Image (cartoon, rainbow, N blue to C red):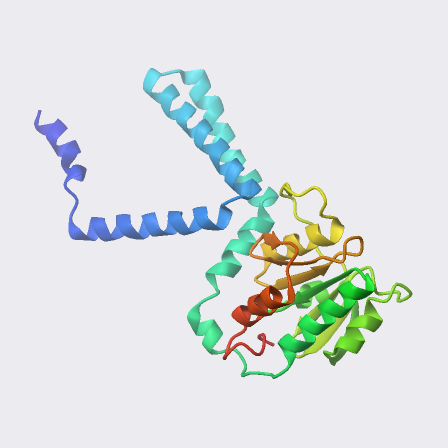
Length: 262
C-alpha cells in the first residue's frame, strides 16, 4: 500500500512542476496554432491515433501489436520530419517574428504602399496577371536566386513593364524588398494543402505556398478575372478592393506603416 501511495505522489505537484506544465502546455498550444489547417495537423492526428492504439496494446499486453506500433512510431517520426520540412520551417520562422525583430526593422520609406497599390490596380485594369511577393522580417533571398536579379527602385511603371505579356519575366513573381524590386521571374513553391476555391489558379497556389513558408505578404492579380487577392500566413483573401489592399499592406509595415523590412 505504501508503494502505491508513493507512485501517486506525482498527483500533488510542487510549484516548479506547475511552471513546467505551463511551459509545456504553451509550447504545444503554439505548435498546434502553427500547424492548424495544414497537412501536418492531419499527420499529428494520425500519430495520436497510433499512439492511442499503442497505449491500448500495452494495457491489454498485446506483445506483437505493441512491437509493431512501437516501430511504426519510431520511424514515423523520422519520416514526418522529412515530409513536413516546409511546415516546420514556417513554424520556426514565425517563432522568430518577435516584437524586438520589428523594432529593429528599418525606418519608414514613403511611397512603398502607394506604389504597390497603384501597381496592382493598374495591372488589374490592364488584365495582366501578376504576383508580388513583399518581404517582411523573413528574407526571400533564397527564392530570389531562382529568378532574374533586378535591383531597381520600385515603381508602378516598372511593374507594368515586367508583367507585360510580351515580357519574358511576366510568368514569374516579383520580389519586393523595402522600396526596391530585387528579382523578377521568380518561381515560388506551390501550396501542398487543399484550396477550397477551385477557381484559384497556379499564381494563387504559389502565393499561398510562399506565405506558408515565410511571413511575406503576397499580392496576386488574376489574368482571367482581374481580381486582386492577398495571401499571408497561409491564407488568401480574394476580391480585395483598393481600400482593403492598402489596409493589409499598412498593417504589415513596421515603423508607422510605410515600409517593409529590407
